[in-house]
Image (tube, rainbow, N blue to C red; front, side, top):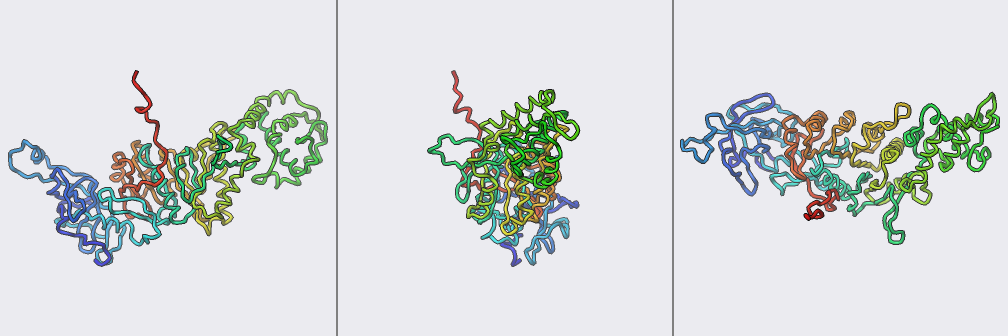
Length: 561
């Protein structure tokens, strides 16, 4: 047993004997479980028959790791635990143990599954915390591992996981509001900084503003409150990084008359950016002109016009649509078509309102702001470990927040496909992930699927770009995205559908482990993943920079009259 940190079958930790064996569970006699208090041995707690307790079942060549999921008294002994009992008989509790994994006694290696089931009358021992730590961390190098949590019943026993185990196959942090999800994200980000890794954090609500060391904070949306004393760095995401479908969802044109004119106006402005001699005062004038010369230019520069990020001046978009509203006859465009122009009046109004919105300045008028794609490129070459993109002030109007975030995801995926992250693996942390996944925007004629982060989850790993998805609504995450997650950190989940989704997505979490999810306290979680031998309950280490995720203190501000 030289590979084990401590002897697994310490007689002082004996708690019972096997009395029934099934393929996945065993029943045991728990003679000490009727005690109203837990015991201790050598400075470590020993519940000796408490639901949730990890145990070791002796076997000839293995120590079988299990977890107590049920404790009960036979009907005949039910009243023996009452203070008024005077029959003098002892209680004989019976426990149900879920079999989880095995440890080879000779080598100390963790073995998936149960190579040999226990036999009747074999002894059961309360698992020493160091043995559970050993089973989970086996083979990890402590100096390059992420210090994530403590074992709940042994707060001096730290659980550490390698970056490969946590992020190598993507990671999901799940949990209802108030369960500690934000704590976990902040803790992971701080550990990425400590290990000199790279991460891009999409902060949907601004709650991670307190993160400091190794973090570059930029704000997408919002405006400086005090120009002289403002220390925040504001960035823009230029509109030309949006594609045609994004503009269709944002401006929502009617398909009968407005959509064709919007499409033609976008193409005309992009052509004008290539050949300025075709236009006047920033617009391509079509009225009373021959079609062929301009159509030939569209054909000649088709690749540049359709290219991702093709430049154009959006401030002329409304006027260009007006110039598209012309009558067509033969090989010429004739004068203005007042009827079509009237049909487009609502579209022109929506465009003008959006372009003049102060909240959308970072998209439509970003000339005096640093471009976020440029910020991302400079961050990757810098000595900063985390780029936090605050989107707290990016509005939802015109579906701007979802469209822009999805566009940034497309940009990151393009960088990944060109090999940008191979030498510097990067984790994309997407908080409130349910806002940006499994959603379709627009109507049946112009629809955009928010799929860029789903694509990163499906193919980013081979390029060195992985994801950390954090959400309180697992049921709103696509099943094919959750199936790509190699590690789950699951906090309290009350909704039954959420628990079912997690149970289905986590290969190592069955119904008995999922049954503990509604009772987890703040900061408590179950860690389970492809490289994890079993679902492990932990207490997440509080981050140094506490997220600002608490709601308003009603009792402090409300006063009785």
